[in-house]
Amino acid sequence: MLFSNEMFCLRQTLQAECPTAPPTSCTCHMDYVAPDPDGVTLRPVTTINCSYRGLFDLPEKLPEVTTTLLLKGNQVLFLCMTVNLCGLFNGTVHH
Image (cartoon, rainbow, N blue to C red; front, side, top):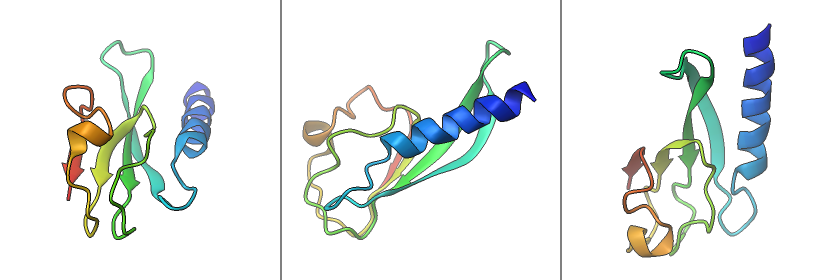
């Protein structure tokens, strides 16, 4: 029961932080959750899909729990300058 409450909170936080407003219009999906190495909390594995949105820049803010960022079909040239992905983003960027 504790895990289902925690998952509900994680999902709500993800949806609240998801950059869904135009012009970005990304979608956010929690793929699954895994136990954190501490064995107490859950760690969400999430995909933020901003593919084919005609973007020149990334959203100003991405959810903290972003694991995979999909950017295919956009014209984003400088990832590190638009969002601080240089060393702070521990996930995967697909473009």
